[in-house]
Amino acid sequence: MNISEKPDKSSNKVPKNQAATYSAPALEKGLDILELLAETEGGLSQKDLSSRIGRSVSEIYRMLNVLVQRGYVVSESDSYTLSTKLFQLSHYYPPTARLVTEATPLMHELSREIEFSCHLSVYNMGKQTVIASAEVPHGMGFHFRVGTEIGIPLSASGQVLVAFHDPITRGLRIKECFEGSKIEEDRFRKSLDEVLRKGFSSIQSRQFSGLHAVSFPVLDINHKAIAALTVPMLKRLDVKQTSLKEVEKKLGKCAELLNHRIS
Image (tube, rainbow, N blue to C red; front, side):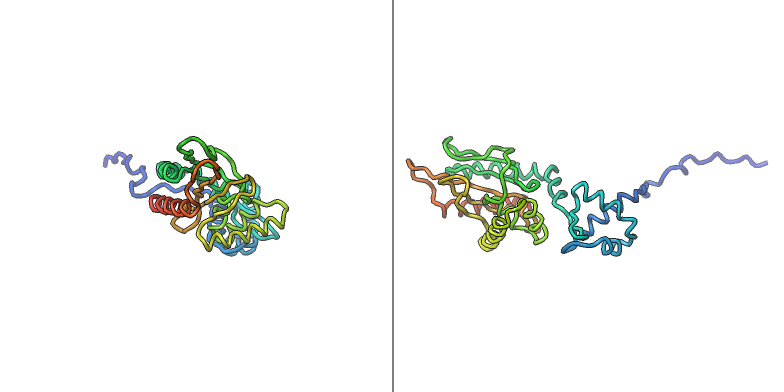
């Protein structure tokens, strides 16, 4: 009579080199849609989407509706495009903290040199939010506090945050910023051509008398603006100030150095 061997308990364990796999079909459908739209120039219809990701129209119908409702996808005339929400969410991720960490000392050094304040802003759902700021060294001047929300259409930084992107993203941002004024929208679109040609924005304020703003893009590895570095120049009558050309030159060098540090 043979004595049966005790079962090997280790045989029930998942091998170390074999990771456990889990299935989440609905999530996979959503990710397939987002990834496809992210790499596609222009919008796609439901039929195009279903064909490209290998799923039926009925399979992706509900998922598309949810993505539209949650703001990740924009639907217009049966064409679907990716919104800027994923980009906005990325600002809550640690790289933004690194951007602020790298930018802050450079901004303070720049402010000491030119004797104007400097601030760093990022795009945020049709507006922009200041995430770092260096005040005027002597305490007198114009500056924005961290957390301040600034409009896009009338600001130099707004032009920069919209201009330095692919046509699809640029169009989506313009759509978010303008709610009805076709004249202002057309004017803004034309200003972007000049910004792209020069590589930065330098404009007289249409909101404050005697204020001129210069703004340079902070670019990612794909040469798209993740932030805008801006100097608002408020004209003073009692002292000689750094010239506009000098501010443009020094701010450009500061932005270039910041681009190098975060790339």
